[in-house]
Image (cartoon, rainbow, N blue to C red; front, top):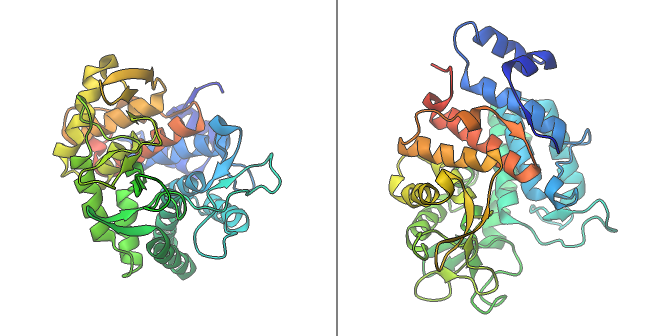
Length: 361
């Protein structure tokens, strides 16, 4: 896919309400929300079908609960209720096939049936629930709030487990527990979507948000491996200390890069947890993100797309190391996953660190 950048000129040509607000704002200063609204227009064009299916272009055009949740969330943040409702309607019709309030994790247009595995992906459920919480607040819709509460309670019942390290999120209802893998339970810290967890705790008193956040922050502190002191994508909680899970490569990779993204988005107050990520990026590839083998801190492959650089800029803004985030501000589509991380990083910067966006006041 050819990369395309959003500029104020292209947003104006799109003729949307968001573009008009940008045009007005540029007479003085650009509002952080204008960056998000304009970038969402391009993201929606490239990855969201008219029916509301969010397409993973890196995985043969499948859709999954994670992508549907991201699409719903960004649509709310861009105040695009029409797109939100299309994505939510498609999600309900195609992924809610389990008979509970968790979504099946994968929908394949080339397969029959389209949903072959009804296991859930807990991060997708968190994202969908979070988007519904926000939609209920923004658009004053009690149905959204009701659905968010049901999802939060289903996550609690099906995927929250007690471990020696505190309450933890299993990545899915099946396949990750103490009896499912030899070194189970196995967790993935990138599934701790901290802002989502916090808001779902408001949606349902049964959802143990505070305990999950406490466990996630503690594991981010203790589950640091090798010279780079970074978490593995997949972590075993079977022993006295966390270890890289035996069934997966012991690496910091495309999953784990979301750990600092969600942490920097959630709070300004965890510089001690964010510093190892920034230091690792500083020490490898001139500040660029990469897949790192943990035992020796060897770079296995680059993460060259702009979306990964946007994550590093977000972390730099949180730590005060970046005064401006030019890559994050100049959103471009490259492929579904890095483009999604790019737009999420832009949203996080706009919400928490707007001083890092060019031309804002």
